Amino acid sequence: MTHIVVIGGGPAGYIAAIAAIQNGSQVTLVEEKYLGGTCLNVSCIPTKALLQSAEIVEKVKNALTFGIELPDGKTVINWGGEYRKEKDKSSSSSWAELVT
Amino acid sequence: MKKNKITVKKGSASFLNSHMIVVQNGSEKETIQADKFIIASGSEPVQLPFAPFDGEWVVITKGMKCHDGKIAIVTGSGRGIGKAIALRLAHDGINIVINDINEEAAQETAKEIESIRRKSMAEKADVSNREDVFSMVKQVVDHLGQLDIMISNAGRCRQLCFLPRFGGLKLYDRIICFD
Ligand SMILES: Cc1cc2nc3c(=O)[nH]c(=O)nc-3n(C[C@H](O)[C@H](O)[C@H](O)COP(=O)(O)OP(=O)(O)OC[C@H]3O[C@@H](n4cnc5c(N)ncnc54)[C@H](O)[C@@H]3O)c2cc1C
Image (cartoon, rainbow over all chains, first blue to last red; front, side, top):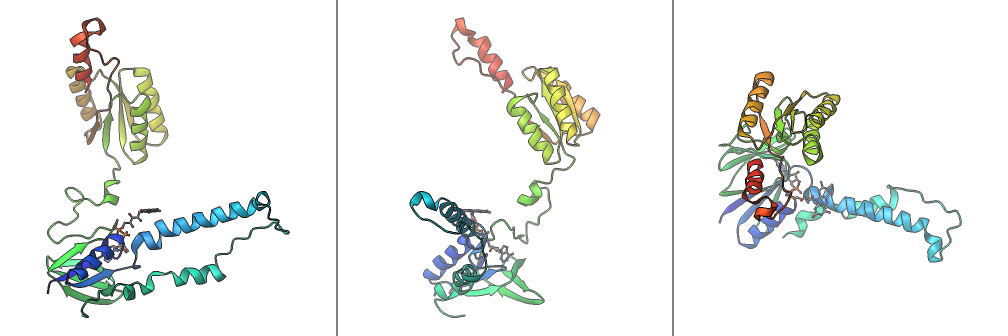
């Protein structure tokens, strides 16, 4: 059986690893930081999540135009609590379990 | 190694030779031998054993931005796109020779380049004239000692019609000379 080593667990690396294992090779994937690579952990996905947060702030500020009144009128940004919990749930730590 | 399951190793991989890597995780090291390697390390380059990053033939993208002290001529850089190219290169640490047929514009751009602490000189030369170009390059090498980058930006395209009454072949020659 061919043993293939993939260096890097980003979109390029994990797709290569999945394709290789589907083709019957033995596969070792080496990743120095986070599985999912730049895209999942620091670029595409987190930036779009931030954009979504900004859009929500904007919508909340304009809530009245949608007929919704927010009595204290304040928007407070809180990256801890529920946000943190959700983020941890979607983190890449369980990724290796998914690609069996 | 389980069948149908990808083995994931945490650590930074580097090649020992063409069929072996070492994976370093903190103080732990593990060597892995394989039949094939796929390098998918994104913007972090992995050095191949037979092609070390020497900064000359094999450069990394971050290294490519290291232009400090190089000399570039940008033709037609008194204004417009040429000037924008010159300023951009100057911001990357390159010293710029501003060439233009309009000497005043060239000198003004050269001053602007100097204001961001790069060396600059204005060289009036008509790039459609071979002698002018040769003497400009000689001047630059004599004064600044080297020429690393040449950007042929100057160009001309007034009319796209080469019918005799619009300039004919003379106009054609003039445009081609520039390029
Ligand atoms: C701010 C930003 C926003 C972006 N937004 C988008 C977007 O909206 N949509 C989009 O399509 N693209 C986007 N991108 C581009 C996208 O992130 C990249 O194209 C994609 O991540 C490239 O995938 P990759 O697998 O080649 O590299 P990476 O995702 O960078 O993965 C490489 C992996 O290799 C690992 N690695 C490197 N060297 C070694 C080594 N020696 N040993 C072990 N592991 C190593 C790294 O830790 C990394 O995890 C964005 C990029 C940035 C910077």
